[in-house]
Image (tube, rainbow, N blue to C red; front, side, top):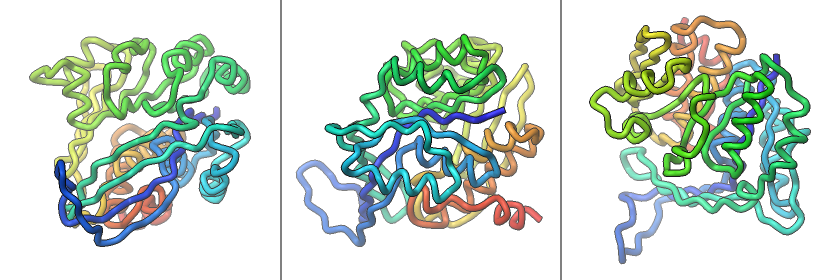
Length: 294
């Protein structure tokens, strides 16, 4: 069994600010940091740090993508399937982090939006039924990737972030695990009173996992709700917290850990990540997570 993360790779520039910049306002930053990111990269690193062998597929610019490949490789992620483009720059993100540790992000897709069906076919030819596929919503051709992976018989995980209208055009009935935050669950369920129950009714074969920040997380699968309280910490930077949760949750399940234990590990890993600055750089190793739980 192999795990493929078909996802984004971004060069992130993060500015720590007193408050988010308002229209017409110019604000001096408290600090500035450049790092490797993208939900795809973050989740691949989290999967690797959870103890899994993960393969990453996606695209970078040949001129500026070396740091992204290096970050994946140093974390133990296999990059054999990453495409390097001659004339397209890597994706990038502009991130503001305020005094409360909240963030807002502006994305430029770059190479992430240059994924083609032919490239998808070449990558998926290396995977078989029973392998896992992890997706976000920061690359092109996601509907095609889902359809092809379903035809193969892969277990499909979707974190539809950023949530927008394109998600509704995806073949969501093929998804086996939805990983959502509270806002994404609300939007995907058309603002239903109980988003998790509504999504389970629409996609009865899928597990619906929703994270609620400091209020913990819930998984509804086959009609049964599993709840996991959050571990109380003082948040410094929430960038990458959801990606950390996704990586450790899916990585644990893929390694045969039961659902409740997977949620506990993911919650603990996420709680550690928000006490540190950065996205991929804040993700803890499995041994640290296990030590914190003991």
